[in-house]
Image (cartoon, rainbow, N blue to C red; front, side, top):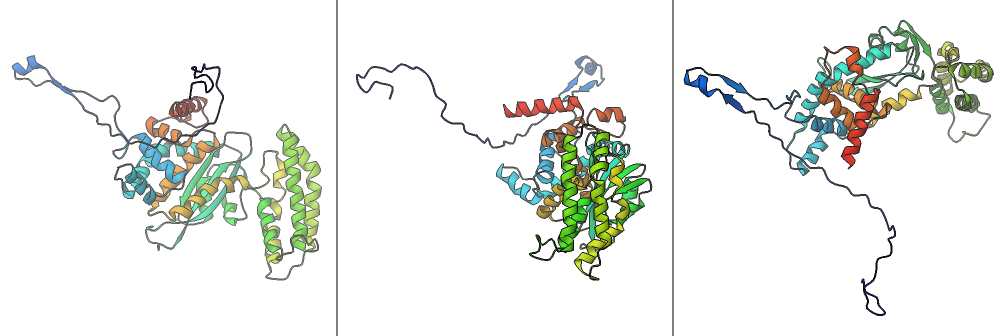
Length: 413
């Protein structure tokens, strides 16, 4: 092909042209690394009947629970809590690579290592959250099969607590509890003083020093449910009229946030532009006389019960207008729940809360999830570390971000 078709002379290279680019997948490989410790004896002392022996070390003591590396344990966590792949499917996946790792083994890896090395970071994140003035919360059902004194069908809960929109580093924490009692929120948020954005659940009212703010997205949702089928554009429907007010508020929020450069300017713009809309909405609300027991009646009751919270967000530009951030943060758990369905034990549920926290913290702070989990398992934070030392391992730390970025680049080479 490199000869002239006319005279058969060798062709001379004169340039090149880009044709295409292909993405090549390189399957994972498993390695088994064996560590040996060499022992030494003093021959001279041995002649005199003395036994002087020194045993060498491998230089990197293995402190993880289970005969697996930090990267292997982190991969199991990443697959379940980031990719929603249950242990039973991971077990089959490991067999494809030639390793027989049971789901029970993987569960023990996650439970023991997360409690030993992630829990100190979890508690540190919680302390940092309680220092903030703006927090958000949500909760969703969870089934745990073997809770002491409870039936397998009993409904447990996974709570989500996170920082608000105050401009600080994002903090996201999950908490498992057997019930939905408001005391769980009181216990977790003990010491918090500030604005708390959540849905309409009255259990949050028990948090003593929290000032409730109402979620306008939830209010809109109740009105949407009250619109008769096929009547979404019928402006004669009371529910549709209410939705128009709230949609106007959402558009104003979007515009104001795009133009505001400070929280003070945001507050000022809200007071100027949104207060008239809210007053019009409340006037409309007072005129509603829905049929008792109807969906519209349920919506009006829901809104009236939260009337005192509707304008709380106007007090500070850092307050959130809706609880959408919390719902977005708890969604990875609800997606995972559809795949793995339930937790077997309370220890497994608690481990899930801790690992989900680390996963979502990594996402929220823009670092690679797998490498951050591996990083923590290698650094092995513990209860004896001070908050200053734990801060050096947090995903918002610039040194941590630089290290994880380097790891990602090296893994892609």
